[in-house]
Length: 95
Image: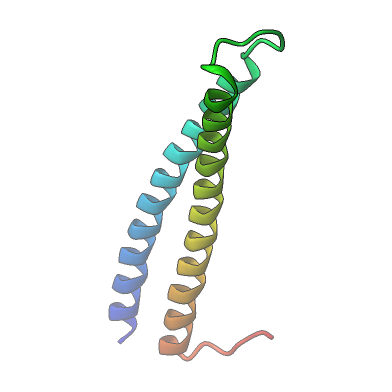
């Protein structure tokens, strides 16, 4: 039983590493988009008027929200999987 739990933990670890890589890629996109926003000149930006400015701002905001939601999902996945392993291994709760 212990070997099976160890295998499950190893597979979950690999899965979580892949999730972390995906989130890192999303973070890098959000950082680059934010850098592009800060590069926009304060006076007379050429962004197709107010509509273009609003669309660009909305895109950056959506990207950042998606990244934060991804972090929350990964946190939940980590907690759920570790909870199952602790229950299966009969490790007493510290709380």
